[in-house]
Amino acid sequence: MQGDGEIIGTGLEISMDVRFAVSVQKGKTINWPRGETDTHWFCIGNARPLDQALQHATTEMFQFLQEDFSLTSSEASLLLGQAVEYEIANMFNPAYSVVCKLPKSILSSMFT
Image 1 (spheres, rainbow, N blue to C red):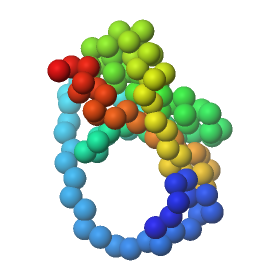
Image 2: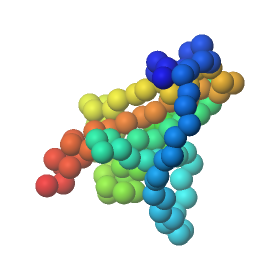
Image 3: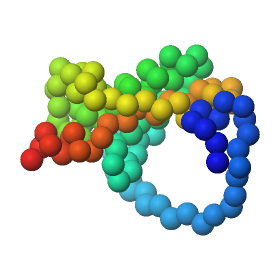
Image 4: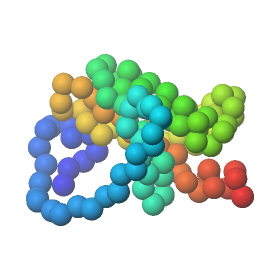
């Protein structure tokens, strides 16, 4: 357990068994990790300074919207400008981690 950002480098950690699925998409290249939860699509950037980590995450989300949802650059920009959510995932390590998220509910309403 720890607050967002791991700001002091400590947390309550336990062992656990985790199951997750990975799919390989041959011929596809991404620059930063992408993923999804039940409620959000997300991309993670990692860099120092903090604004560079945010830029990596945002650029990856921008590309994801264009490639996987066929949005134009204008559409992707407008969507990010209205609906993006950020989380600071790590402030303690030498590089910062920023998560750029979009609610699935917004994307699903665009394509129904």
